[in-house]
Length: 174
Image 1: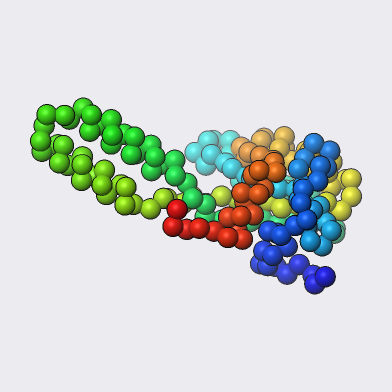
Image 2: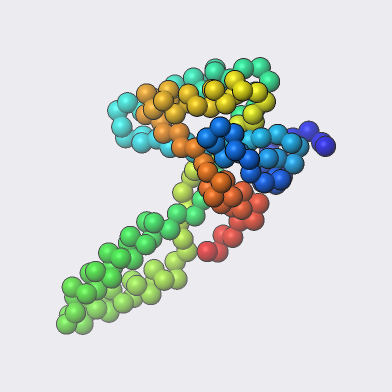
């Protein structure tokens, strides 16, 4: 089996299924390794948020031989569009009887229906398990990063499947 090359997503998105590692869902990769996944989020407006310090801690905590990959992807985020469409529909209901505003809202609604779904940047971590101390470390990450204002959310089987489908076979029109 060829070595995993930086930037090659084939080993990231193909696997032999899922296995349980303690309380975590791990993908069993083609090369036989078990890989855990999480998503990082942060509120940059919160005063306690120090992403740079959190990432430095995370990288400084890695031991020789451990493999952690950061994946940043633009992900379809329909929520802002759905919220705005709902707002327009509510406003349309309030303007019944005012022909000029009805035409304006109808035009805006037609435009929104033609508008594509927006995208948001998301950051994921892939962590290769090589021994039990890797899993011990994985369990400590959320508590430590929380102190820096960074949320670390473990991904379950469904979320990992969605992530791999998005990377392997993205459908950008939806």
